[in-house]
Length: 280
Image 1 (spheres, rainbow, N blue to C red):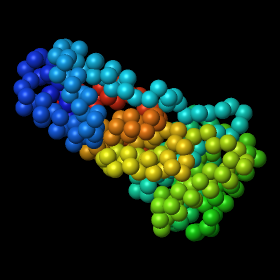
Image 2 (tube, rainbow, N blue to C red):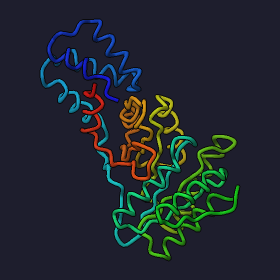
Image 3 (cartoon, rainbow, N blue to C red):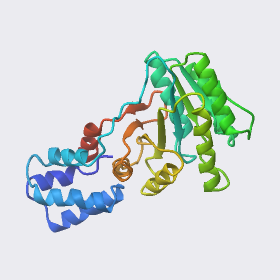
Image 4 (cartoon, rainbow, N blue to C red):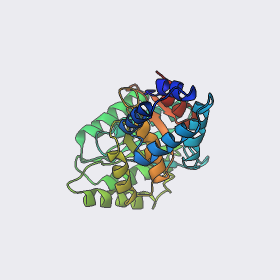
């Protein structure tokens, strides 16, 4: 990330040419900001040729984002239940484990549910993570009913006074309609036991604009309350996190910045945007 520092330096000192503007537009598009978002930034650059350009861009971008809370909703005295959804391969199961570690380190009593029963590797992966970080994982039979696993987990979490239940869900079934019906079913059965406080969509930061389409599909089945953006540690250019939030009006709440168990962080839009814009 951070491909824009040299451009902003030229723009702020009135040394930019039309060719520079054209190249900056290309870089923004390739960085997954999307056409509409890109043109808003270009207009600001063309209008504001000053030393405060970076601050004005950061302020403008933040002003275009949702005003929804970026905090994970935790309710003292009851189980906070988080449903984690997304396409397989986005880092969904790993994100579930990282969240568990994050909240366990804060002193929370955490339980996980391996409801991606159609993918044995996901159940095994989450069980291994659970052993590593010291949190219980509720599992079921291979290719069993995901809703049954989620229901059992909700029941156990309630009876054992767990602070936080995080449910990993399937990201691929035979058809899109089957997947969305399964997610809706999981939500219904869990809510017979305890309310679902968060539905977090995991967005692969390398996916590009297709990630927005994916998120919209999931919103048809379950109302999303937040986004987790993963794989922001490599060649990801980062604009997709902001573009997706703008398109869905759903806040980015967490970002994955590495493969380690502690490589997850709360999303701070000001520092994220500044970092994205100014690092060489």
